[in-house]
Length: 330
Image 1 (cartoon, rainbow, N blue to C red):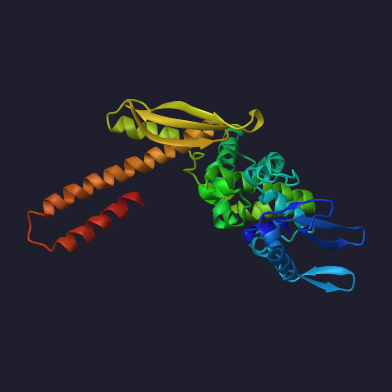
Image 2 (cartoon, one colour):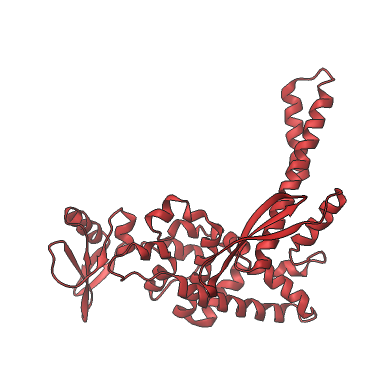
């Protein structure tokens, strides 16, 4: 209910007692949940809650489940939707709850990370029995990286359903890579707690199938962007890239590292990750993308300069240049 009211711009919290702006909603024969909201919003809150339920005898039945859409996207129906709400609740939202009754998803992230590692390692063990430990480790690192998990979260539009505090909402929290990856791990834990390891494994093997199958490619190198960047800058006559830790955030057991990749004294790209190596790989990937774009732009300018010598419509030259750039990047 708290998430429902919050989605309509009404802040509330679970409470006991009997202030004037209290809305009771029976949830079982054993008791009731009471929600406190600002007095001037009490009637609006009451109408919102009433629109989401229907009394059938002594039982409360929801007419519309606020989490139905995300359950459809992930292909799993929760028996306890409170676990799903918990998984989607960011610490910024919990911090705004003065009652202390809102729990954030950090503990679920911790559990989800362990479940993810177990399922992926088990899948790789079965799928690639002839691969050595190093080969399987490279694939695993790629599959469970912050970037990969954030991409999975984006595909299922998980960010649309996150329960954020006002500050995080204003700073674009729904689109932050680290936040999305953390929520994805929390979701894994919620599925595990609700349906057991079988449900979590079924979900992950379905969602991560393409990433796991990519390991069969002969040219798969575990997404070793650092090696690729080193080869690229050496071919360009530049010094080897250096990686510098720009900062660390989070508690000791959930550190997030920020890394800059530097070539010839210039910061080419910056990235973050839950491990230094992961952050370095992502920074190298972004640096490669930047170099590819700069190379394309340089070729494009040269092409335009050459065409300027000929009598040709400017629009045609521009269009061809864009096509050339597209082929370089893709």
